[in-house]
Image (cartoon, rainbow, N blue to C red):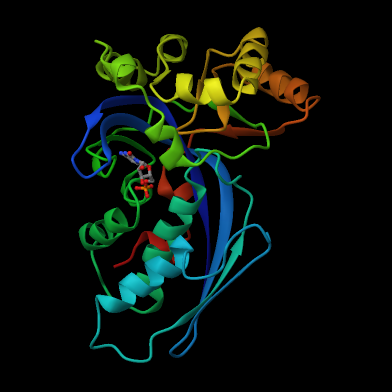
Length: 299
Ligand code: C5P
C-alpha cells in the first residue's frame, strides 16, 4: 500500500504570550487556522528501515528531521511489532522558517499516515501525546482546521470554522529561528491587558473586518526589530485593502486577510511584483478538503 496525502500550513490570527515557564517554554494563547498551502507526503512500507527523500535540498533528511523523529517515536510505542519501517517522500511547497508550521504539519501527517500504514489503530489522543513531545505546534495539525491553543500551544480546543476568507502569505525569503525569537522577547512588553477573547468573538461571528482590526502577535515587534522588511510588507498589504495584516507565529511570513476575493486577487498580483514569495490561499474548513478518505476514517 502507498499513502499519498497533503499537509497544510497554518497561521496564527492571534498569539498572546502569558509568561515564561520554568521549563524554558512560554505559556501562550493562540488562535490557529489552517490555510490552503500544502506539502505532499508519500508513505510506503519498507521492512526495518526508515527513509526520507525530499525534492528540496534545504530540508535536512537526517535524524533531526521531524518526520523521521515522528516515525521513530511511533515505532517505539509498539515494540511488540517487529519489522516496521517506511519510505517517506516529501514534496515541499510551504516555506521553511516562516512561521507557517510546515514541518509540524509534515510530522503530524506522518503520525496519522503511519498509524494507518502500519495499522496501529492508535486514537487521536495517543497520537497527540506523541505529537506534543515532538513540538508545540504539532498537535494542532491533528485537531481541527481552526483551534484555540493554550499552554505551549499543545492544549487545544477545536473551534467551528468561520465562513471562508482569503489569506495572502508573503515570505520575504529570510527564515527566522523560533527559539531565538522567543529568547529576544522583552517580557515587560507583553504585560498588557490584551487577550484573545475579543478575537475569538469576531472569529466565531465571521466578522472579517473586525477580526482584521484586532489581529495581534506579541512576537511581531521582536521580529520587526530584526527584519524591517516586515513593516514594508504590512504597509503594502494594507495599501492593497487587506482587512488586517500580521506576522505568523515567529515569522518571517506576514499574512493579509481579505473578505473580498477580487481585492485578494489584485493584492496577490501586486505583491508578486516584489522580491518576495507570495501565496494566495483561503482558510481550510474541513480535513476532507485535503485528506484522502482512507486517512479521514481511520481508525
Ligand atoms: O516546541 P518547539 O520545538 O516547536 O519550540 C521551539 C522553540 O520555541 C522552543 O525551544 C522554545 O525556545 C520556543 N517556544 C517557547 N514557547 C512556546 C513554544 C516554543 O518558548 N510555547
